[in-house]
Length: 263
Length: 271
Image (cartoon, rainbow over all chains, first blue to last red; front, side, top):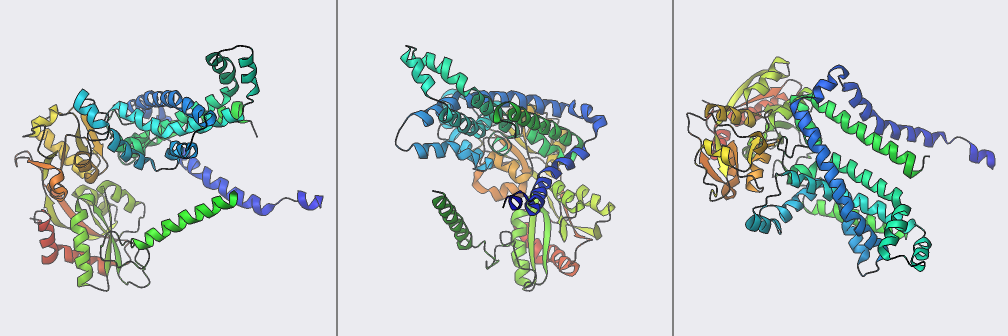
């Protein structure tokens, strides 16, 4: 029995190897296209610099907003009992599976100049979110928010609530309990949520180009620049791709070592 | 629990497939609509060809495709519409196309030089460009110089023919629109869409696209002295395995019926 159980399942390993190759070969293909000698110069071109700067600013804003709204949302979903909670959770997580382009179309009909809310913003205050950097942040927040909710809610559900109860019994106020007990306990979840949200925001394409358009220096983030420069200036597009790839690998590496438990 | 999840997913998938069949995307679709019925079975329909064509040809070629099929019941043409540059790149990388119809001569000349086109391309239509605005022209655009003062102007990407043409036109008219107010579309349809369904204030597109858009935009003419003429060539891809049908299609496009259709969509005659 034990010999049989320990025998190498070569068949599963062979299929796993194919799966592994399928995921990694595109990365290898991308890396071998990089012209390393001119990489720095390619990334210093005006269009590359504008895209990288915009991506950095917008993704940090989006991650911050996703945390600001996502943590309370996760807390409500984890701790407050109410009717329709399962439906509410499903709706909040929808951007994980909805095609981002569809999300962008939805954002347009909600916040565009004729949208549900956008028409009042435009008529009353002259605020136009489409084709603006704020629009990019909104599109990125839309796709990044569920990552915060799903990660932080799991952390809240997984923590030992007796510590909170003990603190309350000892006379701590609710806000103190949250700040001094809950937050430290779910810190790994908070960091993981923020990092995943940031990485997702950085890579956002579909919702951004649909809702915020493609204006160099204003709404043309790095993924948009990659897509549009691929024909005319492939070396810049590939250089930018490598930057995005490196950042994503770094985020995963950091998360894996510190928070997700190395395998 | 797990069982109900699997059952649920099966139901969702079944409904999705049923929807596809009901809407005619299944294999038994009566392929009357040219562009949408792209999955023709090569074993049954002899003489199916694929035409890679500029996005601005979408409506005209869809109709010509239907007429071509009616005139030649044994043959059929399906289309791959996109920006001329993207299509040229696809063909260079071996995309299975039989014919190529870009919106400028540069893109087909590139393929001719690379030996990817059989014989000489034929010019079959010309086009002009116009300014389009929101219906009613709320920003009161009357000429190209007004574009410099608008919130957001939508232009085609500079690697796309309509983007090059728009650039030429603005240069001729000595109008400079600040970069931070230009949004670039991947092809002429997305560029127009930024005005017709989006929040951009104006766009420069082909006359024909403005006509197809109907009431969703208002047209402002660009004077001849500032305008350019877009030239549409069509050629046979050297690697095509069905060159007789491809030539028949090109003859149909340049023939009286095809030309009448091109005119009805606002295209100008080739010379």
